[in-house]
Length: 382
Image (tube, rainbow, N blue to C red; front, side, top):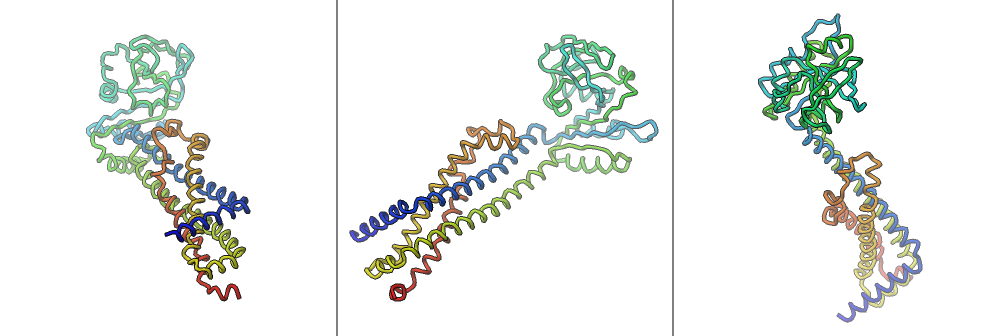
């Protein structure tokens, strides 16, 4: 027992002595390891934040939602309008056909609002989406926040004025409004805008989200058959496949990035360990001749490597927390996703893969030392 303690004290002093003699080598190893760990952590976190952004988008949009947009029918083109063609969808959920005017409305406070033209087929959906809309006295109404409900707002649309009643917009309409107020005008009062282009659109909320994928496929096939060559169909159902693709890509990137980090750690730490061993090869052989076992010398290199890598790993976690918001804000992520209080990818328990990778790399890095220590003492000293 006493001999083991003495061996441990000697090897500890030997490590400390080497560090003091070559501080540059120690600093280089730690700095490179921290940089590689930071790179891996940010890569992994980038994919995780992308997954969260897509999941948030799906949840906020609603898994049963579909928005379809198409250009308007030209005077020379003969084909049914979207609201007529897709009207059977009303039997499967909330079906809201509308047209977006490519001219913005101007409110009394100079704010801009999008103009939505609706017909009689849209009334059931409006009643369902905007509960209480049947109590609105005016057929022209403004769905907007920041205005008292039921007030009258004077609105100008290309030199035409409307008195619109203010209503509270449902959250689902934000995908139509894009965070702007919406002015709803009935088709019977929108004839003055016939010379302007409009965008035919459909907002559909399926009663059963499980059927939506089949509905989308059927709708796309029908529109293609009817000659709708310029359509834009948006639904979270399609984003689920994108989310799965991101997850698969994250696993591949984690494997490739981890292999890259491990390889560099092996090359750098292994090269420095071999260099130090060659510098002290005769002293090492001499100690072996005095009874110091090769296992003790191997443990010396392994403990040093593990200590430096663990220090680098811990430092990288702390530095990543400091620079997390700056890095991913520049990358364009929503600030709500960057709150470490709600999502902290730099916790010790969340990064065992990287820690295990560093441990394996430290073992591989000292394999040349293990092979060299098998050489008989006589051949080394001779």
